[in-house]
Length: 299
Image (cartoon, rainbow, N blue to C red; front, side, top):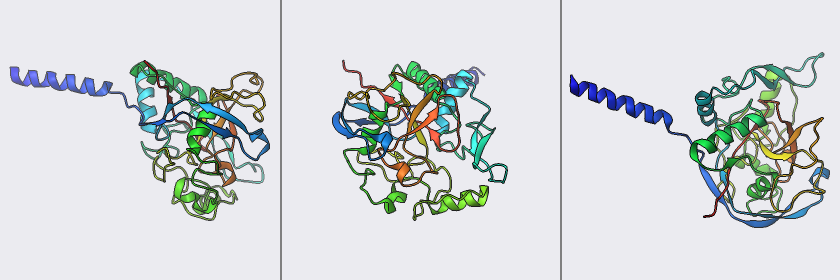
């Protein structure tokens, strides 16, 4: 009887310990360097030199499984609705609207290894803060400059593999033949995509496509990724040291910069230089998620 009780005690201790193991993202060291930030579009101008200090970037976009552990341990409350695709009608021509659902809804979270969506910029920051406290590490969202430097991985071309958009389906989950077909079938939404097939109609599990030269996956498509920067048109007055731009933020329209395009983005929108924005408090299943930076602390 004593042996049984002892074994039961060990099992309780083990399960308690196992439940406390924190799932940390796989990180890749991004080297220090200098690059030319910007592109051809108006809000990507002027092109300018930026110096970047070395940092760690998560190899994959933050997954449903990783975010779930945070929510379950803290009882964190996300919004019960998010932006979703909606069938186009004569009364509703946008193709998307706010409906009931959250990051756990199976339609937007097909598996634990899919990128988490229907979370806000504030939710992402809360997750990073929690993870930092649990691990005694410095996790955060990337600055816009850090994101572009890591996405380019030393390349100055439209995409980190070159300029040929016909190869995009090898490197990311974008608006392609299958995606365009699915949007038309499910929502009567006509959106022309790249003439290739990446095999995913909507989001895909992280790490499915080829990584860039730094070994980072899904910097093209799948979900757009939040940064720390507030939204500005263009780079006049932007920092050149890789830090986030948080000055003169528009309080009446509190938007932040989102990078990387998404599964519903065309070839232009997934260029390394392309910039988009998102609301700080607007969760979306249209392709908005995040990945984390870990600061390298020198001793």
